[in-house]
Amino acid sequence: MTPARRRTLTIAGPLAIVIIGVAAWLYTTEWVDVRENAGYTKEAMTNPFLAANLFLERMDVQVESRLGLKLLDDLPPASDTLLVASSWRALSERRVAALVEWVEQGGHLIMPGTTTWNALRGTSGDPLLDYLEVQVHDSAELTDELAPRENQHDPREELIEMAKASIDAKPMCGPVEALVQLQLAEDDDAVVAVFSSDLSLLDTGGWASRAASSQYGTQLLQFEIGDGLITVITTLTHWRNRIVDCHDHAHLLRLLMGASEKLWWLYDTELPALPVLIWRNAALFVLGVLALIVLIAWREGFRFGPRVTRVAERRRQLMEHIDGIAQFFWQHRSSDKLLDALREEVMSMHHVRADQRSNDLASSLATLTGVAEEEVRWALGVRTERNDANFSRAVGILQRMRKAL
Image (cartoon, rainbow, N blue to C red):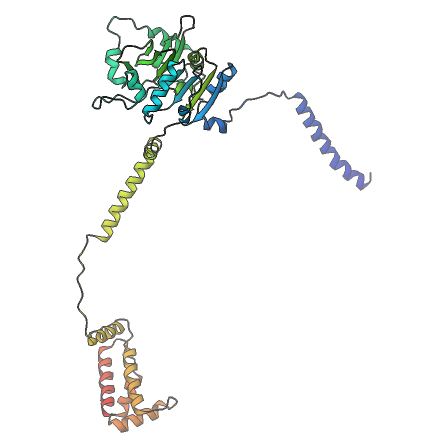
């Protein structure tokens, strides 16, 4: 066998084994389709009630969602249903009057009752709730009144037990104690839904045509006005994308539509203030930032101390500055710079050339000044290095020479 043929078999043999193994694995492997949750789409994140809208469209109900309250200035036909997923605090008297007239002509308005009653002001701040004489209270305020008396059967107990055993009783669907079973019409089936556990409605006018209650109080009221209907409900959360498939939430929305063939859905018309949103979603972060600010303020105050009144300093004399400079040179072992200045002054007075040798300079200075040549030579070359005695002696000799010149 030639070397070339041997090399070809060495490469082709393992490759053939790999191909046969992959083919056998693909043939014997059972392929299974797996569905994975990819999260909300961009449209679902924009519209929190998209799933409910799609459900109604499958039930041959036209749905149109709008952002804001501009539709209230040009109301749809009275045969449609209008659902507003927000508060009505900013509603003007003109819009309230137009809505009531639209309902009297046969329209159906579904509105949330979430603004609590203010006993001091005598109003809830919601003009439509005040018109319907409906008060919204915290459920805790009415718990004692709504609790069943001793030895009294609570009809919701069976409903709660059924919900606990049901597959729909998931944690995200809400507490089973907040379940409500209601029948909107005599020929309709009873539906089960979770309503608010924090709020309760109170029909002070007593002219509601239908009501539905849970353990936490009345959760739904319906008022017949003219040929139309107004439905007040404590929450619209059960129609959000996350839990619209729980219990009979979607079916309840379809029953509320009645014979109406189109739903106008207005949502996110009112947002809390930015500080409220930050505190609600990042309370620990806000507390941490506040604590950090307090610590920084304390640290800065401790570092700089109390405030001190600035006192104007007196102006110094020239000799004080000269003395300060001399002290600085002396403390930094540079006292020879002071002697160098005095030596240069003596030599400039003697008019000596820069290239003249020191021996000739010392002899000439000794002759002119009357100072011993040895002292002159020592004063011109000594290095004091913070030696008090040598420094004082050198200064004295140089001063005698300068005075003599």
